Amino acid sequence: MELKQQYADIAAYLAVGEAVDHDHPLVRATADRIAADQPDAYSYAKAAYEFVRDAIPHSQDSGDVRVTWRASDVLEQGTGICYAKSVAYAALLRARGIPAALCYQRLADDDGSNPVIHGLAAVLLPGEGRWARQDVRGNVPPGVDAQFSVGEERLAWAVRPEVNEVDYPVLYAEPHPVVLGALQAATDRPHLWRTLPTDL
Image (cartoon, rainbow, N blue to C red; front, side, top):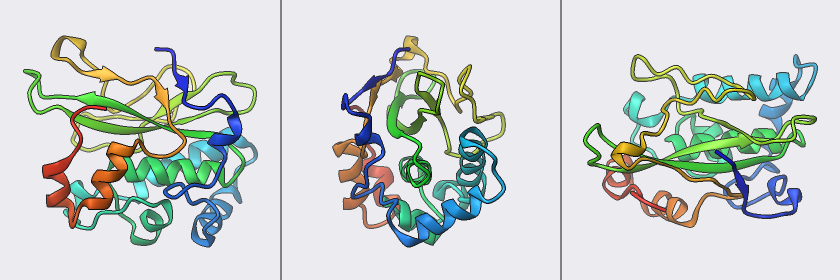
């Protein structure tokens, strides 16, 4: 799939935003801590990916009812759903001068019912020449094996067009307005689960 930038200027994918608040001291400190043992951008991007995927539980998996949407809040509270975790990963990348974007899939049950939007991040590493999508949701349930990769994608789920699943190609600098609106309006995760976007 060919990914399409929402903005032609790569600076948009390095910018500080309302959600991707990589100028926040906690984001900066976390990025500095992760970068301390990493010799290059690739190693840092992989280490930051594994940190967000593994050290910040998906709130559904952990039973946490809090809803986070800003990168600094995800890091401070140590929780978030796929959208929020993707925002945190994008912020950690941008904090080290690595362009990062947000992108989405529509997933569904095996019969095509219960569609839901799933959040991903994308990274543009020096010398790569193309964006690589990453899934930091967390490797739960059993059988999910998302891994950092700039070659062949290693996402949690591959879309199934036969059940109307979709890979959306647009790379956003900030969360899609529908996604951000759902996160900001939710009083808790059970409320969010009833109002998750089903299409973009």
